[in-house]
Image (cartoon, rainbow, N blue to C red):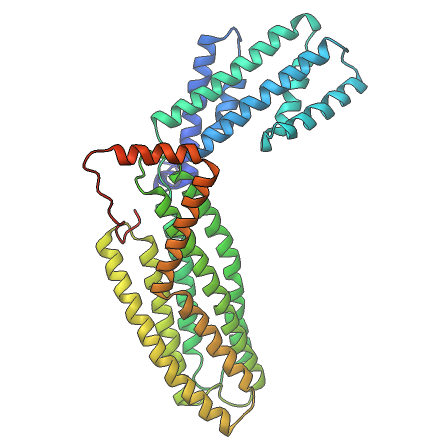
Length: 412
């Protein structure tokens, strides 16, 4: 078996592979349906529409399908109107494109604005006697492709991509953990500036990693919306999103710590970075902080309640050890600064960065933030869709024997 095929099989659960297979099958089905339902000999517009409509999530499929059909219909109507008034020439073509793009923005078809002008040009490009028939064929093929794509995603519901998002968050936090451990190992003895600067560069690279993780999380959030496989979609989205926000703040604080150590290395080129006792305490503190970040990652990404409880217990233990080590380090640094007051402000910056991470990982504050986010979302739903909220409340209260229970620790 060729290597590309083997690699594709190994990656069969990745969103790109799944989307490739699903789009191909949906496009073929829409082409067959268009041959059966329309008069077109080569109805390529139907599979093209399916390719554009069938997305990696059900929510994206619904929204893009509606916008796509809307764009084609608007473009056809514009072309029919122009065909009854003017013929096709350079100035009428320019006016047609201008009007189509303007109307596309007015009807809010978003990324399908160019499709309005494309549909109008294709319809206007035929002879005047065939404008009506061409317009109808184009609308019919678009509808067939959109309906087939929509039914395909409804019958074969796209998977939930929370696992991929969890793996992305886990990869990010693992890189942060490894960086903290390497920074702690370089504190004893003389630390070359180049080595400290390399760690700072790694900390800055985390910004790019966060962008990629955010894209994966956005896809996971969409996969939870309108998905019948998900029972607690809102809670899952809030847990992952707030978790990534916390990790992002920790990454910023980590960059500050790396910057501080680099500045200390620049000012202490002829001596050790920290005395042995201070270096040992700071290494232990960074090790506990690294463990806390790892435990936090497991807490927000695990699918099993028991595993989440174990991760929370470990997080509490690491945070407790971090606070104790931090207090001991603060006393050591204070005594050292009183004897050698050089770069005292860098010592304060180092402790401030650690404090920022520990504060973000605090379990009680995270629970309060989750409750606030859930309340905010519920309030926005009631204010934005009051009738729908009343219907949901009526249905909920009307179910016999219904008991309201708090969600489990595991969000999934």
